[in-house]
Image (cartoon, rainbow, N blue to C red; front, side, top):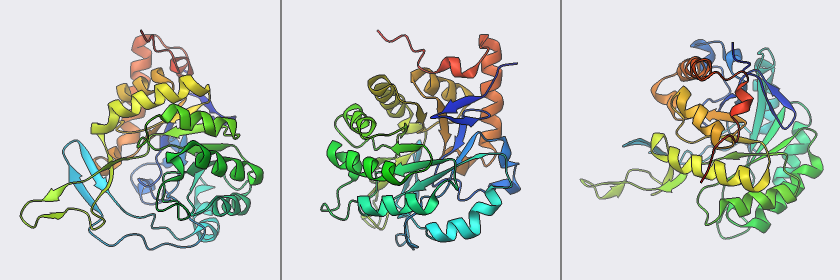
Length: 302
């Protein structure tokens, strides 16, 4: 049997599969379908300092090969998470990642302080709007990405994993800036910026006009980004974006990922993690892989 355990910035995962933030809520609903303890890790719904209602509907739409969404970080706030959601997760044998977003570096730092060591890892989402910079993203510019990373590291009591956006000209440059600012790991990719229009009404399918594209259509982009970021920084990476099968998970790891996020696949198949883990284990067995961690970064690029 293949040893499925992996290490992510010192956090031990029983297997490389992580439920991606924004697609798994806080785990309660999916735990009705399967014991979420089978997962290696779980990245909770994106948290902000205070509760958010999110964007007005329609805010999700199916597209060929995936979906568009503009949910707008609807969440109960970090304090409500600690009080109402984390106790349930603590009953499960799964590493808990707190995905945090903010309007300023100070917001991120305050959340890191509030969370302390209550979770296993902080996933710092720098793809949300930067309210101090004309609506741009912290993750779109190296200095801004580094500023958030450095601020979180000063307050964090657990490893810091920075989540990167693919909507940049050079993701490796952003990744390196985060590493130099103290990041312990990276997760990527977040969604691609996309848009669809209803021809009958001539209105965009989302109320916010554009939103994030996820699903199988983005998988090749995600593999390329993981390969570039891992090679540039040497940091452990959670690779995500369109992973739908055990072979996809293996490919993501070969590109450079230490762990693999499962996101949009959950909407079409709530049992996707169960199936993907089985497929990954079977693939490793047939390929003669003794330890799944041996796959990480084994690509033979030209």
